[in-house]
Length: 299
Image (tube, rainbow, N blue to C red):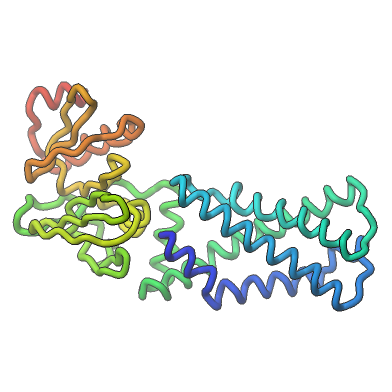
């Protein structure tokens, strides 16, 4: 899910409907009734603070992960939002006239909020996110759900797809590969994407026929929109399709990935443990014979 899709999710009727449903469940269950003695107005303000702070903190945590390119684990994002909303809710309750709760009461409230929010996150992942993404991407919800579960389980392997006329055939294209993918509103045939390069506030998308398209956006969002079996992000500024891989060679500055069109792109040191076996797999699948110096670099 890209950051733009995440922002779209927060505005989507299904997401807002789920938040309202969770709020209704809280009101019906009444887990805080023993701490509160409010009239309707103060109770409405209290719940507004609780759900408003939860949604705001969740958005903040996801934005933080986006900016620093961290993986948005629910244990961090949802847990942070739930505990933060607990703090703001207790503060709002005391401002509205509720007595100061005991430590045991605060622990019970925090525990209930965590369990309830993580249950909501499970329902969100299974039922809401696939339907929201299906709506945003114009694809079947079942396909989106299968990709989401596979990516969360880490089971999407490095396979690839056939290229355009200027590049050798791409081995092992998954039959589930979508016919079109959208990157910042521009549709692409995934089989034709060769490389993506970050250029300040833009990205350059290079296609297998030599075409270069300049789009405004972050490379991390572009990579998130591409099926992971299509290629790898080898450097902070470069994503490379498996079809583009020709060799991996050492340089004084570090490893360089040689592409089939003769270009070279750097491989970040932190990504070498992932990229080295991926290149080996791609080259072995394509049955390419690398030069001896490349083989020694890979060994």
